[in-house]
Length: 106
Image 1 (tube, rainbow, N blue to C red):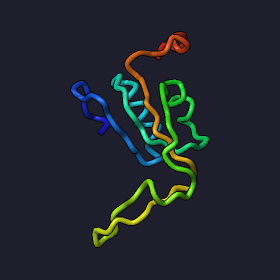
Image 2: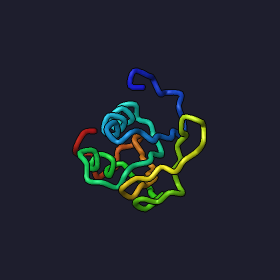
Image 3: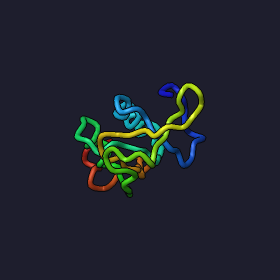
């Protein structure tokens, strides 16, 4: 993913694994691509970067809910996927750096 040119992408949606969120955010910022991203509501090193670019968000699930996310098991049957924390969908804007962040030269 990180070697791709996203100039043709519009209205991106991302649900990266938690360990890759920081790298995905940095990549989207470099590519100046807006995106809706599913994120865990946790305290992590990438939280400040994501918070600086969130223009809208909504709670998708509460901790340990079984109804919002599913995965396929080996036989192809959908089974509930639980997360131990709240999950949010955040609309992130990287095309224009907010005025409040202009001094950071992002």
